[in-house]
Length: 501
Ligand code: NI
Image 1 (cartoon, protein in one colour):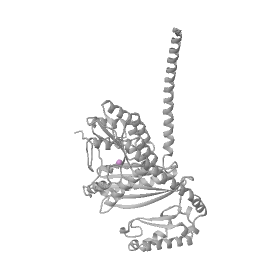
Image 2 (tube, protein in one colour):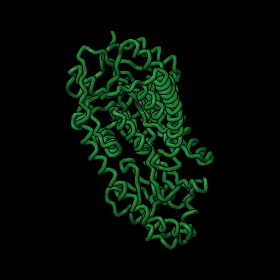
Image 3 (spheres, helix red, strand yellow):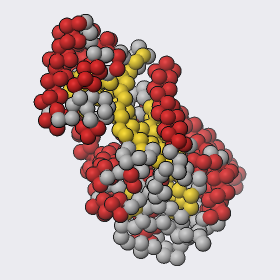
Image 4 (tube, rainbow, N blue to C red):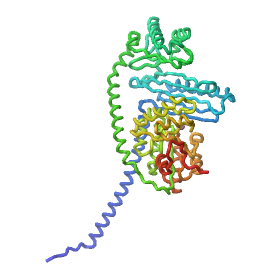
């Protein structure tokens, strides 16, 4: 005999009510959790901003500018020490001022096809923890037949918050100075290309005044830099002389020797670790190539947002966060010099599915560079981007949009299409979120390539409203390579995206 168990009505009501309450509670908990997550994420980003530089304690920004008369690009490293910064930034400012007054003076004397160009790039070398060589390579073309190359080197000690002077490293008594001078001369003469151009009087003058030496030091050697025309005819160019430390060991300051030697093994291990990481990146690249096969609608309404001159430690993370919020993809035209500082940030861009693209190593005006220099600018940057992200850039954007036949040739050799833009946000000029959005929204069309920069806070400020407005107009956000494929824009380019006129 079956007895049917009937649930009294009140139990059903109680159970239902309880489950509703639980659901509401879970829901509100979920809301609380999301809030917590997002604040946690923010603080993560902030920690990241301080520590994401490959060179702890150092940050880098690339300042660019262009007018009808000139283009300029300056790498500006910054530390947490005001006194270290002051010396470096004052020197940079002086280079810029000198250049601008030279441009002013030479006005009218120019071939109309050329603009003056100033490029200050920095090579950063970590010697030991907290001790860095910052070697600035300046190329200045302000008229006349040739540009001028100069080298300026700073060795900075972040632990003691000071610039290292030569007599922090060397015992420069009479004997010491004499030994070092002889060694330098011997080295110079042994190179027949240099020997030919040496001017002995000039050389003696510089060597006798050690305050005028440009130098850097690492665990292996002391390097001296001589600028064009300083000790030789211009044809010799900038001259570097390397003096192995063991050759001048008895003239090295005691504490310098112990400091440098202690660190030697650590650095070797670190190099091995870095090599290993580059190898792992390579492998993850292969997985990703397969995953990135999205179907796009040929009649869809797409726009390709592009961000130049980064990655930056402060602005790029903000832009990534906004893009993520809107499920938007974009393309980042990175500078090799910035990737050198922030390889982790470059990897984050790639890992979020955005296109990593090439904006040259040092933001050089390629139309005033020779073929070999153009090749270096494109290739070195590609290599750094690949090592950091595991992805080979497929597109390159020449700085200032300046290109010629040689640039096209070299880009072709490197298998990177040249990408310009159809909408210039002028974000670097206005530095104003409202102005940026107004320019873009007034000019955008389906298929546009929009030029922005991930180095200005105002650009990051503009982005949420921009994405919201474009989304409301039915736009979807894709990478440049996706856009080219969609538009069946083949070949080396330059590709501009759809022009709205
Ligand atoms: Ni740029």
